[in-house]
Image 1 (cartoon, rainbow over the protein chains, first blue to last red):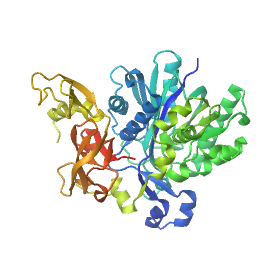
Image 2: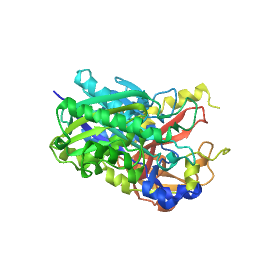
Image 3: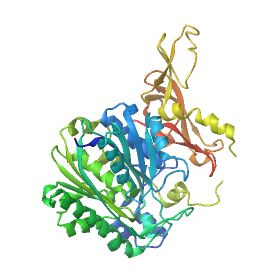
Image 4: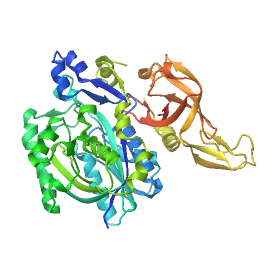
Length: 346
Length: 135
């Protein structure tokens, strides 16, 4: 018997900053930057990876309609865990009422840590070790002031209850593609990450996204035509659309899962927030192929089929579209203060 | 600097602060937050049990904090309200995701999970519920 998504939950913070606003500070061309990204989400001062994951997890449990005490595992992927030593998963487990009988760990694999968490919980469920597990990704991404990443590094979370009973989407198969590729990294104690500039595209993103996606299509004996929706990791709007073109996927099959132009790159949550938006709209029987990408580098692919249970659960929590529309703009000075970029403050 | 004593003090309240968990007296059907071991109404006849609140309520009264206590300075100006939960209990909490001008008595709110305060750069991060305008 297959396992799948019993409940899903998204969280997108309210605050936004426009790319034109960031561009003005660094004497860049606001119009040029706005073509690449219009605006990105910003976490408030009292929001972090843990708070956003808890909000998303509560929505996922609400949609699943299960007793949280039945959750036997909590795995959370992030590259912005609030503590270096002290688990985020235990905070989430406690806040949703799943402690103490649960497996738990915090994962890190750049932007694919969230999908790695789903793979682990899916395996536990398939092995019969647990009835339900909670997994997903949450990030308040960091970009060095003035760096290209500052325009895109955003915040968001998506969490999923995985189980076998009453699933809204079955997880039909999953496959990973990993090589040791230094396209993006952040050393211990360093505040901001570094990246290999143009090197991040070809040997990083495209090699792994295509490797995993072609791999899962081959393993399942399916073709692009068999899927209604494709969701790819989205560090910008161009990469996922270029990957789709290389794979012969029509653009319209990618757009529902492409949230980057409205919220930016939410790192561990990026592909799975796209998946949440697809689940908000897909009809029963729809087939989804999702491939994440994490620098370092690797991709996780999933094939899923939406079931007729989706109609009962979808409206039990806020849809992604509502969270995208619920927003308040801040200027760069406020952004710098909220992101604690101003030094010397007591 | 936080002390080990403070760590234990906070840890004892994690569960009730994370999950908005209080008490109810099954004899007189009254609800309390924070948790109570005795019903102030029924006294020794009261039967107290743990209760998880729904998180929905209305603003009973509020004030805007402009001069904040230690650990809350960065949030000023912010709203602290007495929220009357739909079960009847009263809780004191910050109201977020809106400006002080948007808050009014009777406004419907719901709980949200946020950072309450950090004990400096190296100390504990304290999480718990705050309230936001009901969507």
